[in-house]
Image (cartoon, one colour):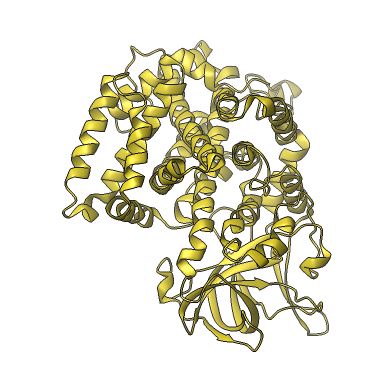
Length: 544
């Protein structure tokens, strides 16, 4: 075979050996905007360290290895004893360990903790999204446990620890712990009030014995789990430790692992409880109210995770077009490809900007900001997670046939992209949650309108879209049937307001013209040609 036929030309270099954080102009700007000046140097340094790890060839290889070697279930040891363990590839443990060490479970106890964690979560998702589940669950369980101050005092230091200890042993002997959760059951799904798992009180106050099943148990290798079960007083939240204080293993019978479309490196399991020891969290009958803080935090992580996937997809597409030549020039310079890339970049920037704004509201913690989160989180979760799939598929197409080949990494992003829309309540659940807040919590709507109103008069298309949204709010009769329409408009108006306030003029102009002004087609690459598309694409280009 002639060697000349195998000379490789006109191929982009691998997108590796760079700082994933520092190379993202949108993310770095958002961090600067939402971080107190006295902390900014420290936060930048920490995020750049994580970004350099995420952009390294070694860590990217770990991500591929973890994805290519899904976890396995071992129900029994060789002697026939029930052990119910999940075995992971070493690369997955390395990734999870680095995530914990970077503080991705430690937002609640650090200044500017939510913004720095949100940025880190967005960066780390771009390596391999599978380890994001235990990172998210461990982070999000903290507000739920605070319903019981004694439990919070015991568990919170372990959950916010920056030490990853993978061994299954009593939590009080570990320097750090990770958490999972089991909410949904076969017969109910998102309707958790239909759960049938029963909780029988034991002699010790606050302790129970659980009997039942969970159709989806997230991160089943964890040290503890939040679960919902029916106590005598109604649906109640419980903490189920994996290993009891005396060193014996709790009854936690793993039936099988789910065979999923994406998120292959992460384990999701079906689990049976049969005399399983549990500790009540909050009051009997207050299960949903107790768990809602965890749900809100994990929903924000769905937004951030989707923003991270979009950012990586767009970065790969722009990087490819920067180096690939066709029809006499760089793809990046071709007007039609530039339009596609700019359109994708707008979607990515809007998602990142919104995600970091929500994280900053958590750091603020004031009544106005918490009211804003009540509407903004489910609206953002609804819209951003749905846009993720369309972005990933279009970005893969920018690489042509190469984007359909596993080695490019784009198929993994495509398979991962629908997941965040399903996790923590699919689209209809989010839309209905927004409706409940609109009807029952007027302060939430006021906080949302205050945020959007910060840039009133700055862009006529945004003003027009806001006016149309107010018309939707004025007619609540039969609103459930148009809930998706209303929530979509809310998310777009909020994104538009944030971009008008914070993004370069060419970005805000393009977003408002297309998403709010109607000058847009049904696919990416249909932006008005009069816009400054080259500047938008350059802003999205990852700089090594």
